[in-house]
Length: 374
Ligand SMILES: Cc1ncc(COP(=O)(O)O)c(C=O)c1O
Image 1: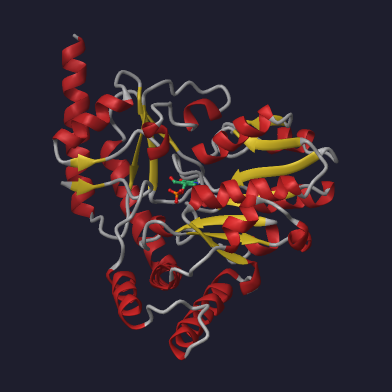
Image 2 (image 1 turned 120 degrees about the horizontal axis):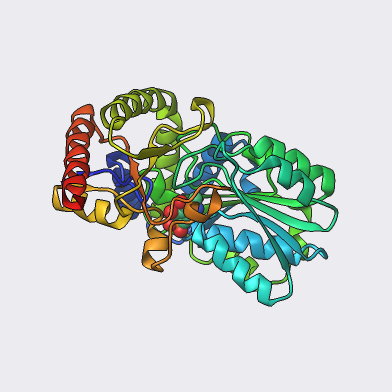
């Protein structure tokens, strides 16, 4: 079986796993304890915070650990809204399910949610966003890299717009770390989210960068959750290793994945009625390929590929869990992807041969679908 679903999750890297085992064996003490064991654990913790701070260009005091990207998103939204008197939130339709769920909740609390679509270039419609953001806007939430089609969103422009209007800006960077430069996000956003399992780190850990002077004034359950309890040092250290590794490998990996993408697209390009949902090269991460074939349901494609030994997906795993359409299906202005969308995503272990074999299988499935329709 060949795994082509890296945007859903990645396997933990050997180095991150090794770090986990070493720290679990040698630094098991509670880092808040006052004895020497506790002190040693605390020193390891401080080193992780220092290293992460350097990678993210952020003060360690603004970095918090959560149980994943979804929790980081939910906590950030909750904390930021608790700090604002404004009642309007602007969110892209393509956001992750965690953000959609938060919006449903805040709508019942009387907030006005303004949804924004992606334009023909597959990024958020900036003209519309410019019209919507005002001094009534409490918060804008936007992914850095879209998890279903892999387009890079114009976070710099959005940040400027938010600053001009005094609105908070939360960036969901879960799909972007290790794929694109993230060391400027701390200067663009009030908060941003990362997740361990998307970057070859452990599952069950996420990061929230949160930079707001009024943090001390917050009085909420989210803040208590964020400030945490006993530190899970082995997981934090393994996550730190994964962050360091992903950061170091970014340029080489990007080049390799770009080559893979070009060859893969060349091999599938002549499939009848195939649409590749992608941005221009400079706003597209190479590892995520969003696809749609007019006469084949995404779900059928995924199941057939699975039967033939390839693991792909119909979009975000959370939407599959809630049996809803991938968010991207409704997010693109004037484009009806209906239920034909599926996603192929590559990663560190993907080879040219894997993709060449996969493209043969895709061609076969499409060919037999056409014959069956006759
Ligand atoms: C863009 C984006 N945000 C958030 C998440 C949620 O992250 P986690 O699985 O760590 O909760 C995902 C996961 O698919 C994602 O793709």
